[in-house]
Image (cartoon, rainbow, N blue to C red; front, side):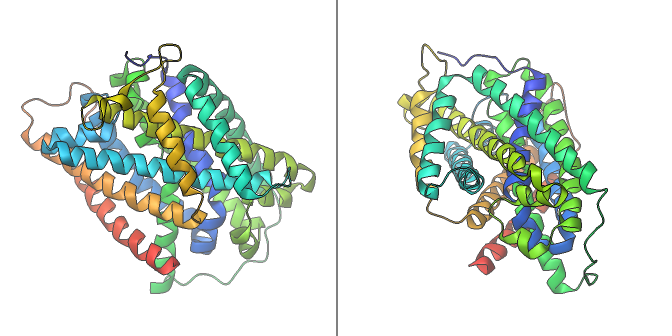
Amino acid sequence: MPLKRAITLPLLIFYGTGTMLGAGIYALIGEVAGTAGTLAPYAFVIAAVLAAFTGASYAEFSVRHPRSAGEAAFVNAGFGSDRLAMGIGLLIVLSGIVSAGVMVQAIAGYAGNFINLPPLIIMLAAIALLGGLALWGISQSIVVIALITTLEAGVLLLIIILGGQLEPLPAPTPTVLDGSAMLSLLSGAVLAFYAYIGFEDMVNVAEEVQNPERAMPIAILSAIVISTLIYVGVAWVAIRITPLAALSESAAPMALIFGQISPQGETWVALIALLAVSNGALVQIIMASRVIYGLANQKLLPARLGSVSDHRNTPGPATFTVLALLVLSTLFSLGTLARVTSLILLIVFATVNLALIRVKMHADQPSPGFAVPLAIPATGFVASISFAFISLVSLFLAK
């Protein structure tokens, strides 16, 4: 039974932007600021450039092969290898599960403002609730994602406007861009890159999108641009009005930032941040389950994992598999999970960019719709490989 095409272009943009905002600002602004310091806004810009090159490659591939488990189909088209395609697909599943783990931990951090329960209990309850929503139906899930994305984006814009009007904290000593500062900036950019996961999630719901050949390129590039503008603005406000040490150590960084603007509004921002990271986790659960479903339909995983509920039009066995693995991710720290996610995705992105280079060099006909110059995937490949190396170094140093 096929999946239902219920996602319109506006909803697809909300879908991608929602997961980016939930991960990038509400979950990780403290981690990025703690790593890059006053250079945090630039870390988001560097990450955005990398995301844009690879996002453009994904956009062309999504026109050529609009399927669930998109990366596996892309790599298969470029290399003609089922094993490599399956490996890339499983890496995407792993990245989705680990990424959802980041946001589930952030849920526990923000929920601590309202309920006095052990973080593990909160995380397990969040996994159960989000899993239930993912199983309920894609139409219901996408509407929830769109509503929460509108709310969280509105709060972030409010923070930029109000925070920009406050007197800044005493200016720190200007950062000297020596080797140590550059490493901190690039390490922060690797963490900030995690904030751009979302465009690869979008291609994995292609079989549920109306007119994906037209909608995907527009939605991918729109989500990256919208997120970057908001990220840079919030990062600028954060380092301007919040002590870096407190920001990097906070389990609820957005609530801390808004507390500098209005102490009375801190609780409300904590609640919205809780919804935002829940939104991001829901997107990752949906994405990972669709990749498993797609791999099964491409005969790269057991056929049982490709079955769809007759009543809900959702891939039940694939979703339950994701939820079971997500429970294991609660054993690791938030920063480590984010760095691991970035490393996995950078490896995948490098492979997808290389696959597009091969397709463009050997294809008899150009893409039927959106197409990019060969320099785009070539630059995306070099940037992804370079950032993967930096990510590996950062992960080693973080330990």
